Length: 130
Image (cartoon, rainbow, N blue to C red; front, side, top):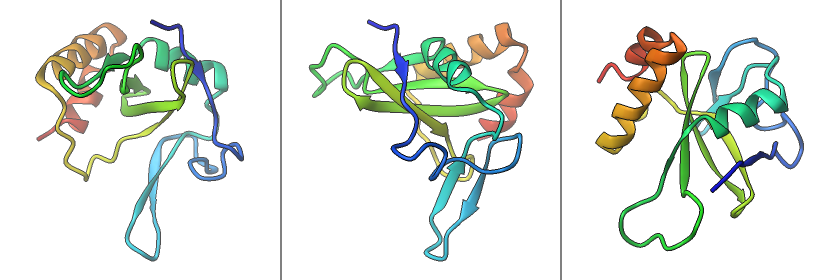
């Protein structure tokens, strides 16, 4: 598996980009929260984060040779990458800390270990405060 390519939005930075150097969210009039990537993240950095991420596929019902999701840590934020070109590329976006995300225990443990290595354990703990 991998290495994976990063694929930006169809219109780069249109949906998930903004003018701030940190990840965050905007709330649409519908109440939907849209994750925004840091304005200064490069495609190379995004691809590096995806390839350093924790791949995950459900134990049942997923019979493909590529992960359904890749969980990444970038600048202390948790990102979820989903396939864009199945088997070749992914697009990552910040997970919403206000949305309950049920990480599989094995993924959570691996993310915690990865955050320790990256020196971002405290940031990830704040994010995973539940």
